[in-house]
Length: 185
Length: 241
Image (tube, rainbow over all chains, first blue to last red; front, side, top):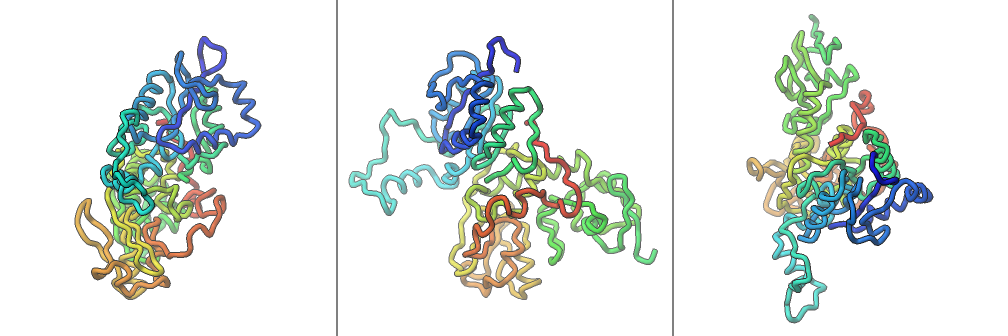
């Protein structure tokens, strides 16, 4: 990974995801020390850094886009990252959040906040504070919103798959994962 | 001739019996042709087109095309693999295939085909169609989200179980498997002992109470690609796309 800075920079985010892919990355166990030597974490919950302050070599995207904030974040990652990698089934396919995709949004909200069997909401009001990001009509995989360079499915992708992917990209090698590491579950 | 003839598959001469399909002849010779709708116990149907190969340069479904003397077949060329890969991707976007919450995951032929082809994501936009679930039968579950319309269950009900519990209804994008009668599967004479769930290549027709019996790592396609028992895999590399 050619660059003027000493260590390649890696940014990560979880959009409409569950942070399970980030957890799986932590499952590389003691190799986390090696990773800390190999890369510098830029905008990422791993180091609690919330903004980009310079260009980043690799961006890892967990989750698809379920609201306007996800879209804004994903576009920000695309602007700042040389390489974007979709990590996990939510980023590559919409995943569990996309289970709502064949149900009209109004019906989803009504079920969640008004008519659902465990809902207590006498006013019947659906949350509409302007602070809340607007939901999209559907949940979109990341590559349906911005250009994505690499894809690593899995729910989550195994620690081994994440490690091998990162190392290959950092060393500028072609991403060729063995059969056992590409899984959709 | 005595019923024997010779065909050429990817430049290799293969002996075949007259009346065999290309898929059968290839399989006998240790050449895997990917397939979804084809099943050894069932009549041929030719709906999924995953077995598409090129015969004399023309795209043909290997599961329905009988061999002819001197046929020249492409089964493993870049063009054929690209056609099949495209078909598999289209099958994924046309339905709702949430592998992460599917009981069939690891044992699913559609998923296994995608693994074999190294598909990390489809190139087409997901359609997320609205499809119902028929969970009314005490022993069987019919989840239309996962159905690829291969028709194995329709044929199995008729040909193996001697019933007509299932059939096709609708056309085009509205085509679906439909139980015989207005009450769904529960209103038919299908039982948990029928073969309809056993032949389903995906998680659309499941026998209730059998999910998650096999742990991760020991499922059918966890380590070995589909077709690996017939020939060597076509490639395990992830596409850089």
